[in-house]
Amino acid sequence: MLSGELIVEERACKNCHLITRKDKSLCPKCKTHTLSDDYSGEVIILDPQHSKIAKYMNINIKGKYALRVR
Ligand SMILES: [Zn+2]
Image (tube, rainbow, N blue to C red; front, side, top):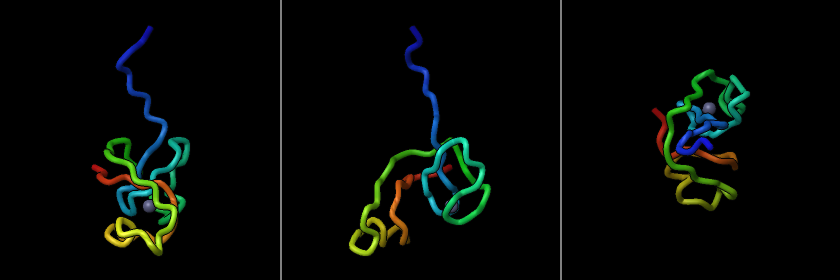
């Protein structure tokens, strides 16, 4: 059995930090091609209007976001 293998199925946008499926080549939010496998931390924003994290990260659309994208 394989263990310790990290299979990345999602990528994060370097521009807006939105996490999207790896089979997408374009960020659905900001329409850029700056998707990266190399991200850390995940935050799910359900209510951007009332979320402090959303405000801090300048997010106005609900979804899953990466805290750090390299
Ligand atoms: Zn984006």
